[in-house]
Image 1 (cartoon, rainbow, N blue to C red):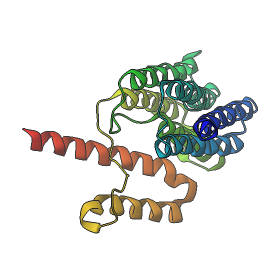
Image 2: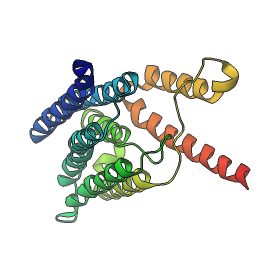
Image 3: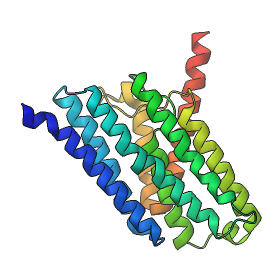
Image 4: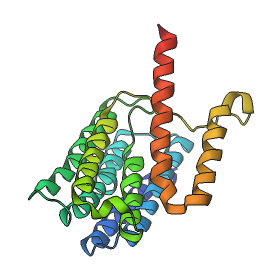
Length: 233
């Protein structure tokens, strides 16, 4: 039983390890390898939670360790990504340091979750937020996108992304749940539709699809959140 209890913590530490590797790759602006390391962090973070629930070992130590690992993998990493994306194209000196607002807000979210865990997802999770910026970094550095050459538009767009990232991380919007309690169409119609659209986007747009899917996920969540509020009145 003691051996089983340490399994979630092992996955948490693997998450942290991959987060550190991602930062090393970012030092040489290797966004491709950084994204691969981040993807493994997300997988290990999922396995950590999965095994904690499976063996019913959700304790305070595990939560604290998980938050510390997440702060590196999903708090510092996205800020460094945005910092690097802004640094070379920013028309205003030192404005690229605004990217670290993402780290600050991520720390706030993780601390808030530790003292007030919820059964449903409220606000954008830090792994999803990191996946957005990781995939965006690959698109920007490997694809010819017209607006990137226009520094002012690029600069304003990146600042808006920082703002919305911080906003959704701490928002009270209940995010659309992708958890299937059963596989009946009637009970999971919107989940199936979302997954079908996401799969289609991945097959047609490949890497470009990832930030599109995340934006689609946020819009879907806002719609259901507003609908729920309207029905409650």
